[in-house]
Length: 186
Image (cartoon, rainbow, N blue to C red; front, side, top):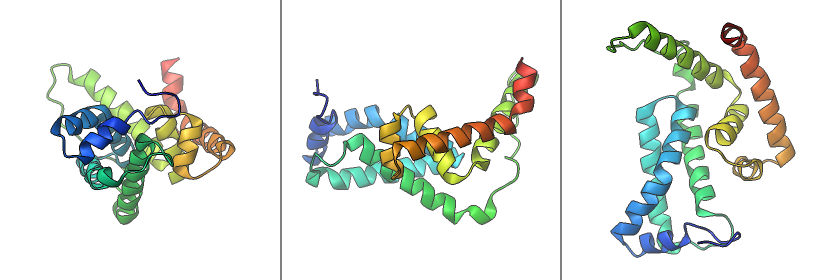
């Protein structure tokens, strides 16, 4: 077990650097779900999220042999790479953002309930996507990725106070955008 200051991924990363397939599998099992979740939430496109995750881990494999512990934990570095790749993709597609997500055919027997869930999920995703980039990133990193404020602030390159301000503004904007849904639930 890693001590508090030690990087828990260091032994796996060393194994990856030596080309050990078991270390590659364990590192992917441990980190891929979180990186995919981050990319899915920021991009709202599962295929682009998979591309970002793949590129993130390709960069990790290239970095593994020369990784030097101490500056950042590997998981933090991995999140930063994924976050930057998502930002690049979002910049490239700003001109083609759709006002509404495309409709999805529901083949489930209880189509009405599932459709309502999809609609609510779509509203939440749209409200999240409508937030300014930094607020959206702060919300996703802290609430969806489960990162602490200190780690999320470091990833975004801001102070903890600035992160808390971004979170507060983002939460208020989401509450306002989804007020009718919140009223319907009460």
